[in-house]
Image: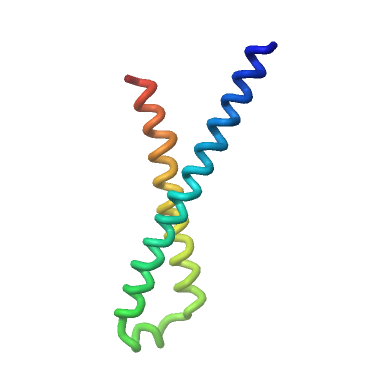
Length: 87
């Protein structure tokens, strides 16, 4: 029972560390992606902006940044872990 408890604590500690590290990385990724997209939007013509609904553009941008973060998280923590197990 003691070994089981120790393994549970170790597992939870690893999960918490992973989330803490990923939180910082995700923040930096989202910040950079948002800045790149913001610069791109400012470079577009006034006509493009007048023909679009601002709310829709912002929604798509937020979803895109979140999707990139999720994709990187899956690649970093699930696919790489699977590859390590296979080795």
